[in-house]
Amino acid sequence: MQIKAEVELLQQIPLFANSGAAHLQLLAFSAKPVSLAAGDCLFKKGEKGGAAYLLVSGTAEIYDDAEGRGEVVATAESGALLGELPMLADAAYGVTVKAASALTAKRIERELFTRLAAEFPEFGRAVMRNVALRMGRSIDSLTELKLMFQS
Image (tube, rainbow, N blue to C red; front, side, top):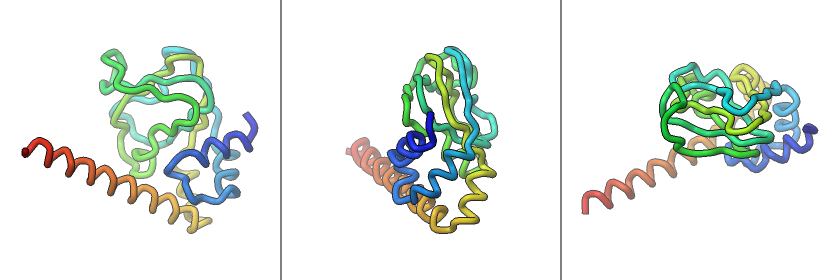
């Protein structure tokens, strides 16, 4: 896939909203291509989250168990970004992701992301702002659920 098309995918991801096209071009160009056959594992629950993955083509299945043998809890398709929060937080992945079909992805290493954020502080600030907004929405949703169950 051409860099332009990968940048367009990145622009659709809420984490990168308000990020400049030049920064996303650098990210797309520097990210490593990954190809998986159906059934191959992208990452496992409990592994160190050293990278996020932009799905370029294909479909992935998301499992709550480390082996990826239980129930599929979600699916992801082209344009999805997987593992971004563990990558940012230098934490373990909370799910297992396997290829449901042949898929291609771009691996965004933590070191690449932190280098871009350090060299281009406006990029880092925009991403961190989006993370904070996402966390705020999650807290609001949890508060609403708590109120529903208290009634």
